[in-house]
Length: 414
Image 1 (cartoon, rainbow, N blue to C red):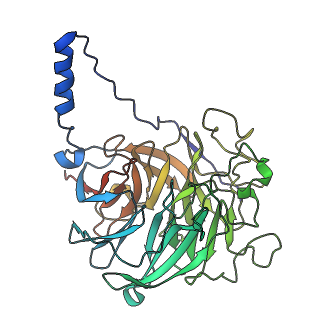
Image 2: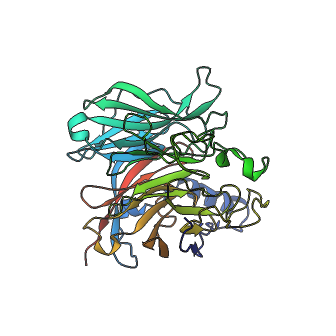
């Protein structure tokens, strides 16, 4: 099924560079200016000032929930309001009553924390209240540590540690590259677990596009997978019993899907994924569909070399929404809360390179508009989640591994 239409974001995805203020002075005057600049405190952030920010529909404030995290990747809310947070270096943390517990949760599997790899997504089993099961995606090392792949583990959370931890899925996506693990997890309302696996950094420039691993189906590279909650293959998966296809594959031809959400009304699976230099996408995932990477697309290779000679092709499914230039998409959610009623139904997408929150409106399967929030105001947004209070929570990822916060958007009132 080819999408009905596509909306191309025309807004600039990157904030304008901050201009350096050059002091054209000589001798001690210049040295004095430099000394003052070096000692000056950094400007307070919007979370610190409580500044009211405006949008098309709501005024809001950014509030700090917790600080002191390192490369937070994903957020999950526990019954009662505590928050689980994964840190990419390999730690699972918990925020209790608004305070980050200094002791990581024990029982996390060993991760290959290189490049973009490490401990990645965290989701709760739909029946968590009774079975206490937590699911983690991570980059799993081979025994010698020389290669890694995307894996999914689950364990029982007793409030302090994970127990009975086991891998329920290990992707056929091994490689030495430290990027493009995908790794988003989502349960649909039927209890099926969807998993994204990236293209693992396989270059589109050194392979014939049609034979790129994301286009071949004897591996999990560049795929969206559908599993039972124990990691087994659902009997009605689209490629079960078909030669040349691994049975876990639900759809394929993706580059690196780092956002995924189940539509609360339709139960449809939606992802966002990274393009190269340009061509980030939102896609509606259909069984058996091929999303075209790297045969078709809207981006170019880093440095400007052409990858594709077309943006659409028969037999390949077009995106619903495209960003050119890229915002480096990350976590994704569909808002359903009461705190921001005019935003209900909007698709919120984090932006890393764009340092923004992109609110996209989609009517059925057609993109109808986009609003950019927080451009350059809070840093690299790694995850976006709706809290049980109806507020919007953000995980901020400091690229160099410095401490980062969890923030939330709250309405500012009339």
